[in-house]
Length: 95
Image (cartoon, rainbow, N blue to C red):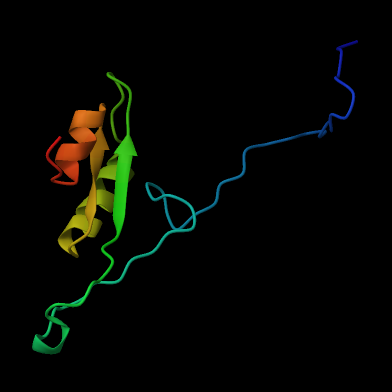
C-alpha cells in the first residue's frame, strides 16, 4: 500500500491531457497580424511572442519549429532560447 499525504486526491486511470491550438503551440495563445497604416504611426501595438525555453541539449519538435515559422512569418517573435542572453537576443534587447 502506497502512502498518500492527507488532503491529496487520487485519480484512477489518469492519463495525459492534450490541449491547445495544435501540436507545437502553447496553450491558450493567439496573435493578430497587423499591417501598419499611416493612421497608426506613433501608436503602440502588441506583437505576439512565443519563445521556446530549451535545455542545453533540448531540441524543438518539427511541430514547434513549424509554429515558430508561422509566428515569425506574421511578424511575431518566436524561437528557442537556452539562456537569458539568448532570450534577450531573440527579443533584440541589448543586455
